Length: 207
Image 1 (cartoon, rainbow, N blue to C red):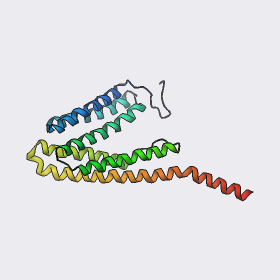
Image 2 (cartoon, rainbow, N blue to C red; image 1 turned 45 degrees about the vertical axis):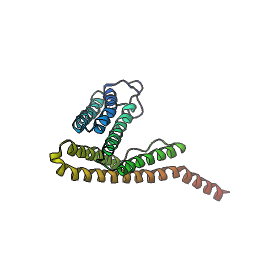
Image 3 (cartoon, rainbow, N blue to C red; image 1 turned 90 degrees about the horizontal axis):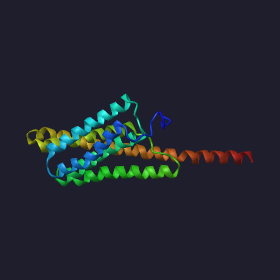
Image 4 (cartoon, rainbow, N blue to C red; image 1 turned 30 degrees about the vertical axis):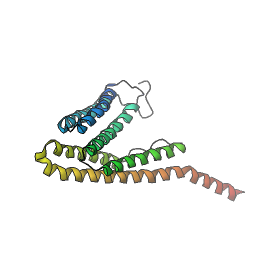
């Protein structure tokens, strides 16, 4: 396929999986508006549609051999935006405290800083750690469970403790993954320095 990357990824933009990912991104503000307005049932429906499109675009990308570089960027971006939208909307409705929003945003701000540091040393982004995926999944699950209790008060007594447990565990894992990224960044940027120091030592002993 023309424009394929080294790992078999295409540079194409207008593929069926990418269009589904773009649709999912376009639904983020709709999702946020429904939460802010207190229409949690509609917000959950949007989230279900977005989740189905997420599963579908991954399946189609493999089935149609349409795995693209853009798709690899759009999928995690959509996940993060839905998490942010849920956090901001629920905080605006006083269903979650603002400090949770700050904790999640601060962690992603850390990753932005680490990305800048890596770029300054000539490295691209670090590969996504499995712990980060688990943390994102936990947040992506816990926040809708909290919304479920708000949408259907009859189940709130059960959904609230489960939602809070999963959300707080996800926030903890989110930062744990962030610490791992920071440690890995420190290790990676030391590699050229260590090699340079070793080279200098060798030259010194040889002189």
